Image 1 (cartoon, one colour):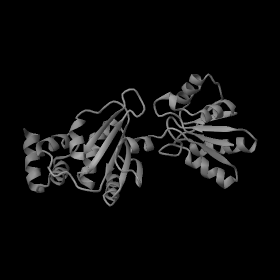
Image 2 (cartoon, rainbow, N blue to C red; image 1 turned 180 degrees about the vertical axis):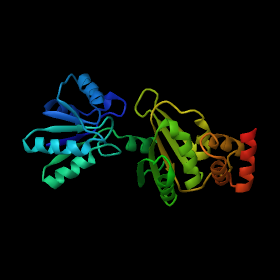
Image 3 (tube, rainbow, N blue to C red; image 1 turned 90 degrees about the vertical axis):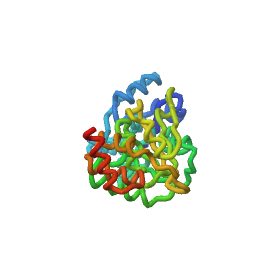
Image 4 (cartoon, helix red, strand yellow; image 1 turned 45 degrees about the vertical axis):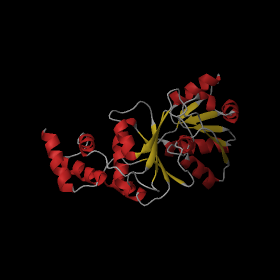
Length: 270
């Protein structure tokens, strides 16, 4: 049997008894990072053969797992944190087992998606989970355009280094709706920031510590007050050309692009 096993997203106390039993009873463990899962096994007082299975070698490792299952071995697969197959490897293993006529099961547990959905305090049924947005270019614009058509909760993962830029892009694409940024989920310094996107953007002039989840609810009334043009432009100019910064600022602030462009030039040449 293959066990796709959820692991803690921060707090080790969130590992389930079933997961502990599976780690203890299995013949070997495949995992996203042997160092991370090795540390978890050490915490449990267990030693098992560990094999890496991540985004760059998943195709070749899947065949190894299938061979072991056919030989009657019990295999656990664990990603670094949370549920395998949700923005992490694991889906290919499951699909290959189905194709091969082999059984697998899922041991549920910690999930950043579900934790963030509830902690956001926003209506979360239904919701759409998009994982990490493409970093730039046409692929990013296409996903943002798709998000702009939704009218229910949207959940994203984001690096702290790109958090503010993504919040700005979301306000441009969706509008100034209610949102939440959930940081360091289940850890000692877990923090929830809630408000409209225009209120959250200024909170992150510097990248926060720890991984973040963004929840946005593109329904209901948008915040009436437009954000300050100079503040928006100053942030956008850190990562965008004058032209692109002005275009985004014009949308965010509800003003003409020409006006935003002129002010962007003034701020740049300062």
